[in-house]
Structures are given as structure tokens and as C-alpha cells.
Length: 404
Image 1 (tube, rainbow, N blue to C red):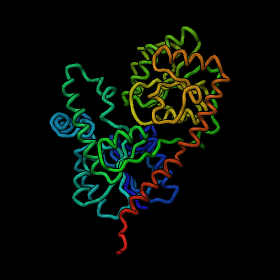
Image 2: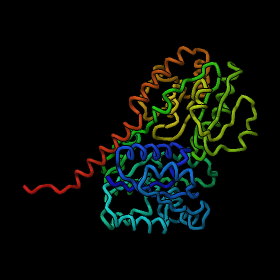
Image 3: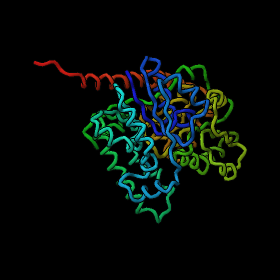
Image 4: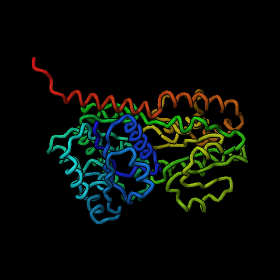
């Protein structure tokens, strides 16, 4: 198939769950012979590493610059436009609209748009030319307000409520316009079906099982790992909860326990806020497998968010025993005590971490079960199969039917 794939960021380097999903789905589809043109917005130009990683997967890579966050147009639209703030940040781009209009003069079997918040520059042209498209929503953005808006000052609460209302209205409009909507979990899919009559299917988040197959945890290290993109508010909240409430309780029982904090966009001031030498501030780590081999387990202390967590799937595929909240394993068919140790309070999570460190045989049992689950149900090949099935269904529905 010829696929036009549209995304509001460059999928390399894979510094977030969204970028990781984009890269591996593009890789999977490319390996199956599909011909893909990637149209991406980016805050920064594509460097040599991005070209080297992406171009072998694509027929064409087209990158359009995104205006700065504090550009006057963004600030004005954020207050007065009918679209939610996240949509105005990624929308209202004349160069992007012009590039898209030119691409629509070509034949495409599938037009794939990632994220409803990126749809605004394309909606009118798609409707005018009566072109169908598939829309993937990684998280139901209107339900993320508890984590996304808590950085706003109290006096901005009326604007927060207004923006959440705009977000719900835009989601309905975007879902209704799509020929097919894709969610990453069944729970998100059910919520989306309440907003729109468009068909909604699940394409799971995945993991490259081959890349993590030879990794095993180091039970003697006493090191727990957390990985996240710290431009995403739920990950900021998770680290703050870990260091303010959870690990002080762990250290009272296991004074030698360590926490490694890795991922893109690590705030520099955290090193001064929590100077304990048992905390390892690592930032973005290019070789995640090497880091995982030095860890005794993974802790997903997530209280907000949506979808399923790629960092959790990667830990499971790498054989790292897991301690998690229900939010940390959302969208995954895993069970407490069978695949991971569960906790919803700081006390319960601290006790689970201590339990994991004190009982290496239990840790290995949980890790083995979780690795089998990740490999069987969440390899990127599974996600590729689900996505191809949706594409084939759409193409079949487009074909002219024979006369009776």
C-alpha cells in the first residue's frame, strides 16, 4: 500500500512512548513492503541521525518546522480560537497546509493521522476533497486534565475548564470526521465510542521482543529503575511521588536501595532538590538494555495518564520484575501477584519494592511471566497485524461493488 503517515513530531530519537510507537510501526510496515511517505512537524530540524534512522523505512521524509511555543499566533489562538490549547500549539500552520494539499494530488491507499490535536491543519482540505483518513489517538486528551493542567496557577482555573470543554468538542469533531479511529487500549476505545459513531479499533502498544530477549535483571544491585519523558506531566508527578513519599519509606527498611531516574527532558533542578547519593540522575540513555541489566526491577508509580505504557512493556520484555499502580499497567492484561506487585498508596508501593528486593525468587517468577506476556501479546508484529487488518477493511469498503 502507499501510505501517507502524518505525525506532529519526528519519531527519532525515540525519547518518548509516542515516538517509540511511531518508529516501530513505521519499521514494521516498511519491512512488510508498504511504501510510506512521512509528513512530520518538528521543533528542530531533522539531523543526520534522524535521516539515517528514518529514511531507510520511507519513500520520502518531509519535515515542516513548527513555530515556537510562545509565538504570538499560538498565544492568541490559545485564548480566542475554538480549538484546545494543544491543538493550537500544533495547528494553524500555513506551510504545513500547503505541503499537505500538494501531497493530496497523489494517490494514497491510506492516510494515517496521529493524534487528534495534530489534525487541525488538514481537516478542511480532507473534507473538501472527500478524502478518508484513519486517526490514531494515543490518549484521550480530555481525560488527562488532572495531570496536564495542575501546573497552571489557581487563578487560571476558569481557563482550564474552558480548555477542557474545547478539548472534548474537538475530540468529537475529529473522531466523527475519521473513517476509522484507532485507540491503544480497549478502555480508551470504549470511551471513544461514547463520543463518536465512527468505528473504533485497538492497535496495541508494542515492544521489540528481539531487542530485549537477552536482558536479565541484576537482583544484587538493589537498584529500581524509572524511565520517562519529562515533557509529559504524569512522569513528572511519578518522580516527585517516588522521591517525596515512596522511597523515604523504602529506605527505612532497605537503606541500600537505589533509584535510577532515566529519560528525556530530566529537569536539572531535581539534582539539587533531592541530593541523596542513592538517587542516580541519568537523563536520556541511548542504550536502555545496558541500563536494564544493572537494575533489580522497574517501578511504575504513575497516578495519571492513559493508554498503555511502552516503558512498562519494555521493562517486562527485558525481564525486569515490576512494581506498579493500576495506572502503570493500564491497557495490559496482567494480574497482580502473577505478573507484578501492585500498590496504589505510597505505603503499599514502598512495601512492594521492599518485598521485591527481599525475595529474588519471587522477583524472577514475576519477571518470567511478564516477559512471556509481553512477547506473546505486545510484540510490534502483533500491532502491525492489527493495523494492516484495519487498512484492508477500509480498502475493501472503498472498492466498487458489482451490480446485482
